[in-house]
Image (cartoon, rainbow, N blue to C red; front, side, top):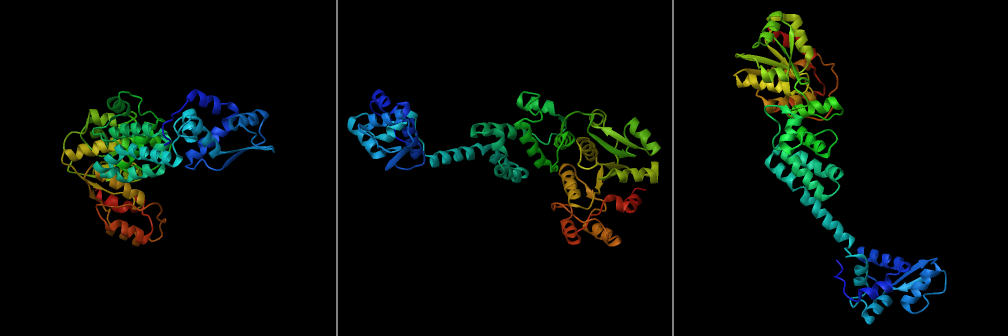
Length: 410
């Protein structure tokens, strides 16, 4: 940074503060910001008569007679020092007239340091919550925080608020998004769609739950619900078959008809009693086929309908807390493995025909299947399963192994 200005400020402003010398002072400042010395000659093409006259007054002589005005930096520097107008020379004079000069490299380095310091809350969260480490690294690298916040100070404040929310997620028991926002930030609208805080918090919440990418209002509602935050208590539902424990469920089970339970029902009136074993599937087609094939005789079954909703997680958590053993089956593809992993992080379950051996048997029975696409995923319940999928390269949907699944439900 240029040293603090000293000298005869009024006289300096009369000498160099002339508007017709602004080009000269501006060029000097730019050179200093770029870290270049004030040596050599600076020229102005096609000067106005006023600009030429101002340069002549500064130098005490005619600064050229052609189509340009030329001034040596050293000449002005020496003049200012000799006259005492700016004992520290031209660089100090520029700082006095236009403000402190910070070389651009130094300014960029200082700004980058400020950005690195702004990410401190994110780094602390990543160290404390391993599940957030990959997300934190991605957020650092993709520029999302910079786009949302604009400045390091705003970024740090945004990250501090985001981390404050993520420390309490997933919410268990689930609660409304507005209530969570009010409790965490003092405003029920703090996590409304479109706000930087909502965008970043939802991104982090998805990292915690493994909820996949998507767009649209329905996707956002389900993404929040996967972290236990609900837009409302009625839109989050779960499908069941022959699960008992409330008058409504008992009646449905007697008929062998599927039941749709809302989160509101599960929070207010969860199923009573203990069910020793409940099987869980990913796709509604399995539950519908069980109802058609076995009716009231079918064993209890719960269907996630894709990503586990807040209602599904609430029901399954209630069941496991009561001593129920869960067995899970899903699609044999990368998305299916991710859904199963999300569920496994929230409730314990044993595989239901959902191992590498089961996958290989299904492929052998029907080799012509759709190709496997997407990003590979882990299967903590059977580490050999992802290797088997990668080796065969095909997906096996639940609907194509219905006969085996239905045989287990009698």
